Amino acid sequence: MATLAKDFTEKVNGPVSAALLAGGIGCAAMGLITLIQEVNDKSAFAKSLVWNKGVGALSGKSMWAIIIFFVAWAILHYVWKDKETDFARISSIAIALLVVGLLGTFPPVWGLFK
Amino acid sequence: MEMNLRETWTVVHGMVFGFIFLLGFSGALYMIYSMKPQLLTAEGISKTVNGAKVYLWGLALSVWAAVFTGAWVVYPWYRAVPPDGTTDLTHFPKFLLLASESTAKWHEFGMEWKEHVAFLAPIAATVVAFVVSYYGPQLAKRVGERRAVMIFFIFAFVATAIAGMFGAFITKAAAVR
Image 1 (tube, one colour):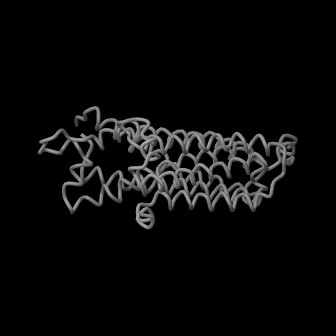
Image 2 (cartoon, chains in turn red, purple; image 1 turned 135 degrees about the horizontal axis):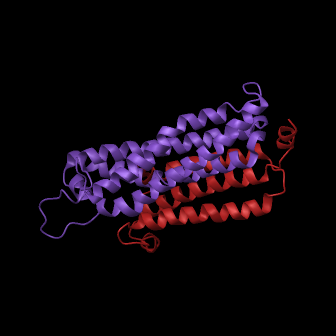
Image 3 (cartoon, rainbow over the protein chains, first blue to last red; image 1 turned 180 degrees about the vertical axis):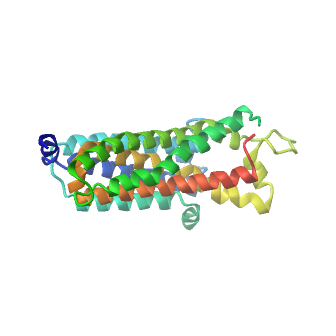
């Protein structure tokens, strides 16, 4: 019981907020980069996403999203690691960003911007 | 009963790594859901959390492996461009699908969505594994955090399910050989 009592001592929620928001940012990045690339796949930006000829633009899109996710996580974790944050607000933003990611990868949405 | 190298990698990508995540999802979700003081004893919560940590990191690694083998190993074979004058498109699945109006949508909608939406899953699953590991048994008393984690995990499952479902249908229409 002593161990459990220790486990239940309050931990700050900053690292959790950081992870959730970074996850949302990473997913939104994937959606937005995909949307921009698909709307004009002949642009210089679209061409810059071809990191590997075999994989095509998916290589740059996915790797950028992953890099943005981990960099955002590292920065937010550093800033919030000892802080108590407004979790309800941050988690709502993170979930909204997940939806942005989902919409950005949905092909019919690309057609709305072409 | 034989499979060539490409078919084997396709199976490893979808039927091993992807399937592990899809199969393991419901059990992991129930673990997180049941971390409630009113449902479990303190000892039960501790045991559930310890199991959930290993289980969730395993699922997260599995879905990362699924997207990386899919994008970097199988996908280049799928989108390979046939040499000029090729009439048999069996080994060029993307072009085989696009060659007929009745199958073109499998690429234009199915594959295009699958290849992108899949990358949302490992990001969300990693966040879930981290949060459960960070809080440990304390997650039982964090209602808002547990709810957010479950939303992220369901999101990861939906993204994987979309990718897996289209992967199976596209393989049926034009397999990577």
